[in-house]
Length: 400
Image (tube, rainbow, N blue to C red):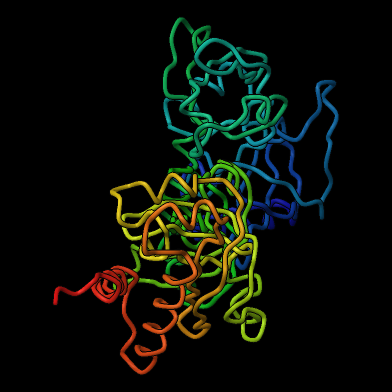
C-alpha cells in the first residue's frame, strides 16, 4: 500500500469516531485530502468525514475546492463513518438525491420563488415544490413578500409522482432547532437582563416575544409604555425584532414577564415639584370609571378626577357627559403624591355649569376633596377603588 493510500486509510479510520453528529445536521469542515473518489474533511478535533468527489465538482466536472478549503455540508450517513453531501446543503441536489433525502428525512435547500394560493412555490434541484403558508415559518401573519427570493432549508414531507409533486416544510426544522436549544436559553435568562427577541404574535393584552429557541415571554400591555397603550399593534408587529427587559421568571422558567417601558426614564421620577396643588393643567381624558375619570396630563402621568368633584355628581351618570373620552380640558390639581404615583384633579367648569346644581360648585367640591386628602395623608396606601368609597362618604351630606 502506498503512503497516500495509508494516509487515506488512517483518515477513514478516524472518521468512524465522529459520533457526536446526527443525520441531517448541517456542519462545517476543512478539506484535508482529496482522493480519486472521495475527499476527507476535518470536522473538528479528531473527527473526519468523507464526501464524494462528484459533490465537489461544478457543472463542467471541474473541482471547485482544494485542500485547506472550508465547506458546508449535510450529514447523510454515519454507518461506517461520517458521510457528507454538499449538494444537499447548496440546493444543487439531483432528483435522485432529493428522493433519498425524503426517504431518510434529510433537509434540503430550496429557494422561495413566489407566493401562490395557500402557500409558496419553492425550487429544489430544478424541481418545483409547494410549501403551505403555515409551514414557511414559526411566526404567523408575516408579510408573504418577506420570504420571496430567500434560500431556506426545508424538509420534504410529501414525495409523489416521481418527485413531480413535492410538499415541503421549513417550520418542522425550525421547531426541532427550538426544542434542542430551549433548555440552554432558559438557563441563560436572568431577571433584569436586557435581551433582543422576535415578536411572534400580538394580542389585545400584549405581545409574545421569542427570546430564542422558541422560549417565549409576555410583554403585557401595561409594560409597553409609561403612557396608556390603547392599541398594542402600534407598539409591536409580528416578525419584528424588539429589545425588552426581563422583569420576572417563575420557578419552572415557563412564564417570563417582559418590559419595554423600563428601558426609558419614568416620567414620575421628575413629577416631584412639577405638579403643585392649585395649578391648572390641560389634560386628555383617557377613560371613564364608575368612581371618576382618568386624565393624562403628559405621556405616562395620569391623574384621577373623582366623581365627587363634578357639579353633576348628584345625578346618575350626568357628570361623565362633561368629560367625553378623548377630549382635552382644563383641570385643577387638588392633590399630589409622587411616591404613590397619584394626582387628584378637578374639572375647571364655567360659571353656568357651576350653577347647574343648587348649593354645590366645582370649587367647593375641590376644597372638600383637598381637605379630605390632607386628612388621609398619614393613612396607609389604598387603591383608587377604596379611596373612591371614602370620598363618597366624606362628600355625602350627613343627616341631622
